[in-house]
View 1 (cartoon, helix red, strand yellow):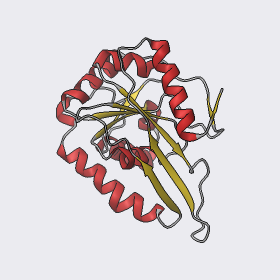
View 2: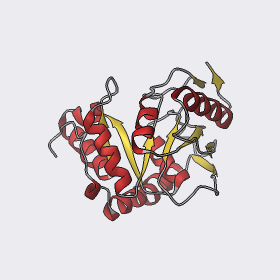
View 3: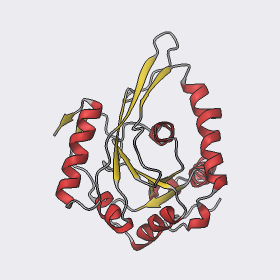
Length: 217
């Protein structure tokens, strides 16, 4: 696959094949392997409406996209850093091909581009949900610190409420089947996109801190 900055995707790119690939990757590859070393504890919000949301979680590992698919049990499109499409060699080709199949599209973390907004609009046109990690990168220090405010701009543009998600237990990896760790996934309450930017950020930070037990910094 030619590695380019795949920032622009269309509604037709988020389809049943995308969802089937996500299910395959989660239940045939990820869970069977990681269940040898981890237990999974999910607390979902069963009162969510049957409409697309923006699911926004703290970011603690490379496994987080799979964990988000597990906790939401919904069709997802993922915002991923553009550098993932710029890895060289055959491994880079493999990464670019498979993250695209999973429903990921690239984003410039330094600047919210028009192509990103258009893709997000098409995500919701396809009735998919959007997965975002507002911290902008993996944070293992168990603190909810400064975040990228772009997810608020996107929420207001696409008119979608934000559901906070807290992920814990895989801040460091373990490969000992005799000392299995527990990965805990918790879903919070929807935050209305109609609130002010400051109110949305405050609510997200507080909910994620409560869901994870992390420190608000």
